Structures are given as C-alpha cells and as structure tokens.
Image 1 (cartoon, rainbow, N blue to C red):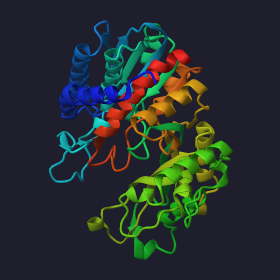
Image 2: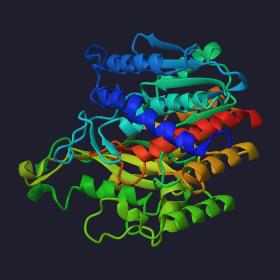
Image 3: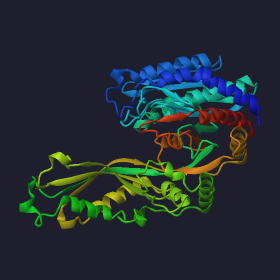
Length: 469
C-alpha cells in the first residue's frame, strides 16, 4: 500500500464532511435533467448552473496547477474537463457525469428529488449517487495523495452531461479534445453498482440492450365488440402470440437465438459473489408480499440478471384508461419492448433478428410493424493484469476490511462504446456506489456516504499504483 490507511480514512472523512457535502447538497437542489427528459434544457439553464457550481468547487479544491475548463457546442450539452498534472509518468482518465434522471413520483414523506436530506450515512436526493458524487470523489482522491506526499501520474477528469440520455455528445467531445485528453493508461469510471456497502465491487461485464415499438393493427376503426368479437381477431391476442415467439410465458426464458455460453471463469466469479451476498440478497427489491423470484437461488438470479436475456414491456399504447374503456374491439395494440442481452451478443445482429421474428408470417395476416428505437452492445472486460488486480484487492482489504468482488452488472452503460472506441487498448476499472435500496432513477435515491468515502480512498490508492504497470 502507498497510502497510510488510518490517516487516509481520517483525511477522506474530513474532506467529505467539510469540503464535499455542502456543495454536493447544492448540486442535488439543481433540477438539471438530462436532455432526454428536458427538451428545453438550454433555455432553462439548469445544466449550466450545475456545471458552473462544480467548476467553481474544483477550482477551489483541486491542486493549484489544475486546469478546469468547460467545453460547449451549440445544441450539445457541456463537458467539464479537469486536467491535473502529476510527477509520475503515465495518465489516468476518471469519468463521471452531471446530468440527472427525471424526478419521479413516490418519494417518501419528507424526501424529494431536489431536496437533499441526510439520514445518518445516507444522503437522499436525485443525482447524488447517480452520478454527481463522482467528480467530488475523484478530486478527493487526488487531494488525499497530495496530502500524504504520494506522487501520482497525470489525471484527467471528464464529466459529461448527457449520460442519462445515452451519451450522444460524449464521442464528439472525445474526438474534439483528443489532443487535450491524450491516451490514458487507465480509465476509472465511477458510475456502476455494488452488491453491498462493505467492500469494493468492480464491474466485469454489462448486458446489452435493444428495444423499440411493436404494433399490431386489425381494423381501420374500433368496432362494437358484440358485432366484431369472434370474427375479427383481437390485436391484443395477436401481440401476445408474437411475444410468445421470443419469451416463454411460464418461465420468462428467452429463445435460444438470444443466448450465449457463459465462460467457466465467469461462473466462478458469480459463485463468489453469490456466497458474499447470501440467500436473501434479492429480497432487497420492493416485491409485493411473498412473491417468488425467477431464480431459485442467489446464484441463479445473478446469472439471470447479468448473462441471460430478459424481456420487459415498458410501455403500452392504444389502450384506454380503465374508466374510459367501452365495449369496443380496438383497432390496434402497441407495446414498447426492452430486451436485455448477454454481454457478448452482438446487439446489431440481435436487433435485426428480433425484428425478423416479430414481423415474419403474422397471425391472421394482421398488419405488424416493429420500429427499433435503441441498440446498445454489452461488454465483457478482459482479466485485470497483476498490478491492477493487486491494487484493487489490497485497497478493498485495507479500506473496507474485505476483498474486492468482481461481478457483472445487469444494466447497460451508454458511455462505454464511446470510451472503448476512443481508447481501445486502455484498461478500464468500472465501479460505483449504487447498491441495495439506493434506487437510482426511482424515488428515494440515496448516496451511501460511508461507501463513497471508502471508495474515494480506494481510487487514490489505485491511481498511485499506475507506476507498477
């Protein structure tokens, strides 16, 4: 270890309490929704407010030779670039984002998306954990190294503002700022999840995602059901039959075309994660009553969540509200589909295959259309080299008292394609603080402050170890 453990934890705790939290609270109060959720974000100015707040804080708290700049382009969200020279050779790129999900309903009494509330070790509010804490943790990690006199390589912090919209602006800035950013030896991303708050969790795979709108049409206009039912096939029944082509309605299993073989080393990772999390881990989800999970064990559910495809209907159209539904055979039914993909399955191929399966030979020759809306590939990261594995494991053991866990995640991370394309030969460490009940994107989102503080110390140690590469 390069860092002195006890001194490091004391410094990080003080840095968070005295320097980070007052500004992080101010950040939570800004309703800077990502452009996908606020079409008038430029006119509203909330994104500029958030970036300005963080820029001013970085200029005050980062090392004196730090260069902090905001980059803009008409019609694109801003990007905050923080360049910190270091005495050691090499370079680390640290990534986070400043845009937020929409507020969402269902917050507990006394809580709200734009009202930071601290309850013990939990800081409630939209965007604290996903992912506003990242820039503060990164600067805190560098400040920790500086305080202990530990040299570090050049560090570049890149904070984008369109991640929650799929990172449409990130590739543009990576290309535009190529010479400023350089080629990092290591990329550290602080926008992922953790299975608990008791050790460092490092993401080793991500699922892909495809989705779009499926529509079945049977009539030009709705018709009295007493006249047409039994003669004209129900569009709902037809769309249900189309879904059966890709999903077993009893088990939820997706057809073999969308499945891949799980590598044996991955199964060993999953076994270790399952043993760490315990039998009741997935009871953390807000299930109703005694609802059973799809998998019989934690191992099964981790496999299902990280390496198997899964379908969800995330929206529906052409269905009247319950209090406005007449006895009519409706002319059409439409559904918005979201299909999670295994990490190594080609998303472009999967999208084309899904469209073909749904539209070929429709029942009753009904008019069936599928319009794809998104397509994101998954990732399986290569094994960590020895120096990086040691840095991850030793920092977790030192600052948490438990070993690091390498595990896949069930979601997709939109910025990954841009980073991998820009730096194809660079190692990535993807980690984060989104653990049990933190509820990013939903009501009652919180940042676990203990986890954030210990992760800050881990990042500092990892950055300082790049010279061992």
